[in-house]
Image 1 (cartoon, rainbow, N blue to C red):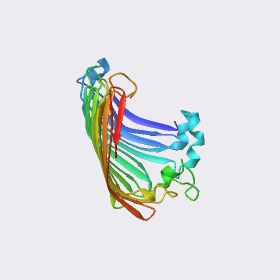
Image 2: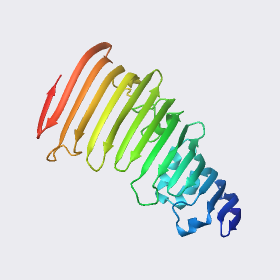
Image 3: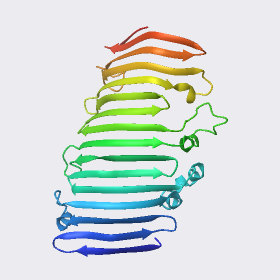
Image 4: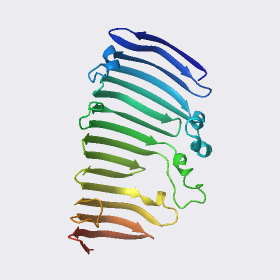
Length: 273
C-alpha cells in the first residue's frame, strides 16, 4: 500500500468509512461505507450501504497469488475496473450494481437481491446479469494463437441471464448472442435431490466462426433434457434427452428435420434417430 486516507466514524449508532482512498503502486480504490454500530455485534439486521469504485491492476496480483505471474503476459491488458453499490442489511443485501470491465475487451454487470447470506438459513438470491465479450482475443490467448488454432473465439458475444437460487435449487434463463445467431437456455438443478431439467434453443448459431477446421455452418436445433442422479451408473439414475435438429449445414450440404431420442432407465440405455 503506497497511500491510504479515510475518515473513520465509530460511535454508539454507526460505523462509517468516508472518502476512502487507497492506492498501491498499480491500483486505486475509492469509496464510502456506512453501517449501524450493531454490525460489530454481528447483528444480522444492521443496515449497511456501500459505494466503492476501483481500478485494479493484475500487476498487484502476484503479491497474493504468485502462480498468476505466468498468466498476466497472456492478457491484452492488466487493468480491471470495478464498481460496487449495495444497501440493505447483513442478512438481506440489495445489490444495486456490481460491474467489472476490462477496457475495450469485456464487461459484465450484475444486480439483484441476496437473502440469508449470514443468518444460517438456506440461501436465497435473485440475480440479473448482462455481459459482453468485445474482443475474442481476450479468451483466445488462453487457447492458442488465432492463426494456428482450430478453435476461434469471435468478437462481440453478448450475454443476458437471470439466476434464481433457493437453498439447494438453482434455476436460470440465459441468452447468448453471436452475430445473427443465438442460444437460449432455461432450466434448473436441485443439488440435494440430484434432479435436473434443461431446455436449449439454438437459432442460426454460427459454429463455423468457432471451429475453423470443421466445415459446419449455422445450426438450428432444440434440445431438452431431464433426469435424476448426476452419476448415470448410480442406482435409480434415469434421464431423458431429446434433440430436434431443424437445420445443419455441413460441407455445403443441408441436413434437416433430424430427431434424436436418448433415455436411461433402470440401468438400460435406449436411443433412436
